[in-house]
Image (cartoon, rainbow, N blue to C red; front, side, top):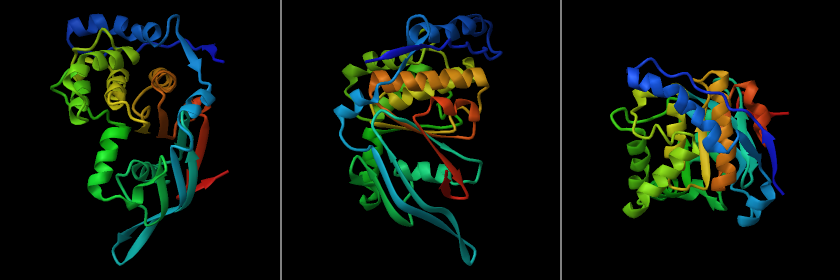
Length: 278
């Protein structure tokens, strides 16, 4: 059964740009409340429904170490990491800068390889794949969200999302419907044709989310997605994440050092000096 929680969604403040953009920004931000769910409701996820669709963990990390050569020695960044991420979960890696959480996130997405240990994505050993196979896997099954948004500034929100579909090899006849759906899902149905400089920080991050989910990945990896946002905008992003898990049947793993958003996570791994504590 699905229960509903009333979570009012705050609005973004528009960036001081062109008058036309400024006039629309307040109303556009309010769309998030209506477009995420009528009346501002955000679903509390019943994970058993999602887990029944895909058996076994999405991610399994077994005794992972990562060292980097420095001068005549090496720095031991990760020191025996073990974790599992189940389908439909929102998992957070909490820690200060330098704790190793971004290094771990990169390895979960196949961007880096462990010095020792195993990382399995849907039962497949990432550390045993060559570069080409890991690139193909990322393109088809993993979405990435970055702290700095990583949008192309000369492209509109629509074009940024469409580009991710082109790169994933999605048939052109599906582009219009999928781009529209993803931008409406993150509350930007009326801001589709604005460029990044015409959008507030929270709106840019929501475009980045739409871009990351457009090709229907199984796993969404987000590196400090709320770090550049105030608390209200950060709450909007987390509401969007929970809605994506429910509607798109995705799994999300993200890094953060923001204690105000931890309560929405299904599981929190706290990192200190390359190890999980607690």
